[in-house]
Length: 242
Image (cartoon, rainbow, N blue to C red; front, top):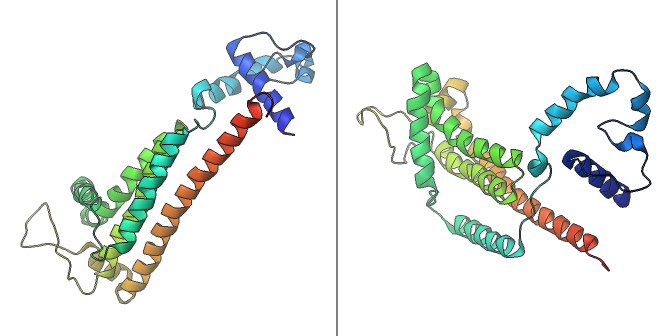
């Protein structure tokens, strides 16, 4: 099965480049549709828009995940292991990366505040989650492992920061920052949980969100390890004599 998939990929790659196909293959293989479709009038014309759309979505350079080198993989794994240890030992609930999260959070209030008070209050957390999520989507689109993992990792790290804020909804003990009048500062999650009748469950919800954050960070690191292992196996398989 693996050999069949590799042969199929090789044929598709050569068709994109316009190279000659390996000897012995049927003439009908030289196209984006099987040989049997060549006998159907207009089949090639009807298939052209789908083929061009496929090429637009994933160009030749973006069709597969780009392998990560061993030095880069080791370096990233050391960094992520250190960060997880640092986060696990932190007792303040505020990590150094949360300084950047705070700036984005406040920017979200200013941005979404144009659409009314409700979105203005929710906008801090919305933009705080959207920025790493959109960056992760960009790297996913271009199949760049390191960038995708980094952005996804810190998307989930944002859950820890949000959970700390959520857990403080009733106590309101955390020092708050505002771009507006410092004499009138609303606690986002005290306000939002109050809207939704969930204020009494602030610490429970925060615990669940924190759990999701940890699971997300660990899972994306595990996925990077899986991709590295798969790519290494494919490289060894492709080498002669392996």
